[in-house]
Amino acid sequence: MFKIKTYNKISKSGLEAFDDKYTIGDEVENADGAIVRSAVLHDEVFPASLKAIARAGAGTNNIPIEKCSEQGIVVFNTPGANANAVKELVIAGLLISSRRVISGIEWTKTLKGEGEAVAKLVEKGKGAFTGPEIKGKSLGVIGLGAIGVMVANAANHLGMKVYGYDPYLSVKSAWNLNHNAVYINDINEIFAKCDYITIHVPLTDSTKNLVNAATIAKMKDGVRILNFSRAGLVNSADIKAALESGKVAAYVTDFPTEEVLDVDGVIAIPHLGASTPESEDNCASMAANELIDYIENGNIVNSVNLPEVTMPRSGEHRICVIHKNIPNMITAIAGIFASDGVNIENMLNKSRGDYAYTMLDTCAADTAAVAEKIAAIDGVIKVRVI
Image (cartoon, rainbow, N blue to C red; front, side):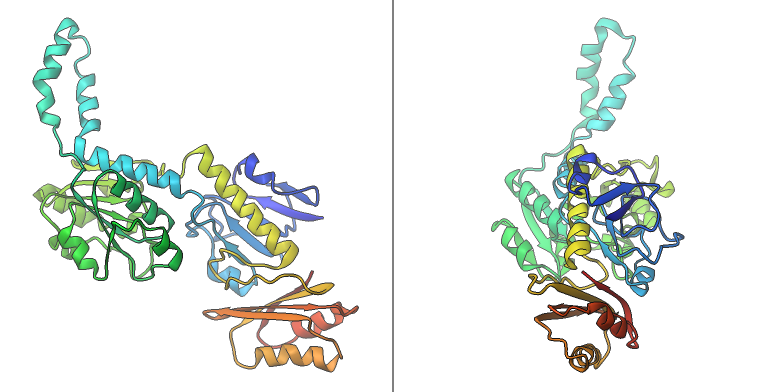
């Protein structure tokens, strides 16, 4: 039996992936795996039994990644599971940044009580809420991951001229990107060419304050900026100043902060990007299947702290080793098999930054003894036998 701890209310549909070998709940102790949505785990004390944490979503800021790596806990996320939900909200953001629909709706409410005069007042006042169409305008998409590509393709179908920028563009994203989109190698071209700019990159030291006074100065007058990734990607003071001067016509964000609330030109959405039942189901299902494959087979897919490693089973037992990415580690591990006269049926090793992962299949009867000796190697963090 395996135990899965849930830190938030997780979609029942997603949890159906677990069969009767699993016990699931928020009161589970000594869990083998955990699923989390928004709960902050930085102060959590993880049990020695914990093998993996799956985040039902893309961002992992609420999980102490380095601490997990040091303890041999694999951290998964679910890239692409909520991409369509976010894409749809971004398209809505494009439209409401232009057409002033929200301002118009709020103004219309003030006409309550005017009786038969409402129709005439509407016709008289609607001119204050005019705004441009997005068809024929240029959209710059910064970050061409699962969400960015879907946004780019949808905008293209709506008649926009799409420019995309991503220095880490994957082969999969390149294949999925509409052929009409123009790939840009220099982000400054995005700033200079685009009427609308939407950001779809993670928040890191290199992307923090990506939109600031200096980058805004390179943009077109009246540019409209959309941020459905993280608040810290846009400097709040600088965007406020740009809105006040008219340099930026509108700022749409799914990550409101105190500084931008109730600022003219800001459309603040309460983090609704992935708030659809379909998205929650998809994320939970993907997270559950990632945990199952790792717990039962040792395979790692969509990890944020360890390399992607998958290998078909070819022996009666599989030994999985999380270790530091240091010289001679493979030699030391293989040496233990050799000294014990144990044959390795198949082996795969990959590294990611300071950490590495090795899977070894064997038909040996006494794998526990081999695993115990491997665990004693300097630099080995966690060993388990499946």
